[in-house]
Amino acid sequence: MTKGQSKPIKNRKKVEFLLYAPHASEVLLMGDFNNWKGEKHPMKKKSMGAWEKTLMLNPGNYEYKYIVDGHWQEDPANRPTRMNAFGTYNNLLTVAE
Image: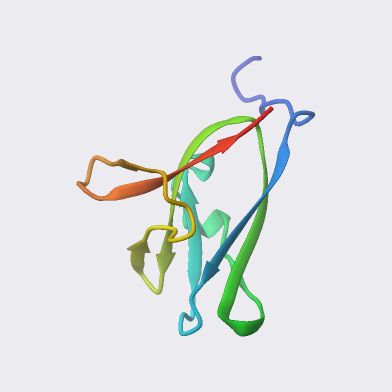
């Protein structure tokens, strides 16, 4: 693959992210899959206070976290974590082949 080409998409898997935050006005999905740029993946508020976002990701290991109304938050529904360079934790996600 040459510089500037994207990764192959044939092996991508659908991954659904869900966060219950009924009082939030904005939730952003941040992770190494979007270079930690939340504006790429704002989440949509659904019924009953749930925020959702579906991504197509290549198989592999990822770290992610949410920004809820400007504050970093771990995913309470996903226990695996790893300490990051800031002394807090990121959630871990493995997308199988």
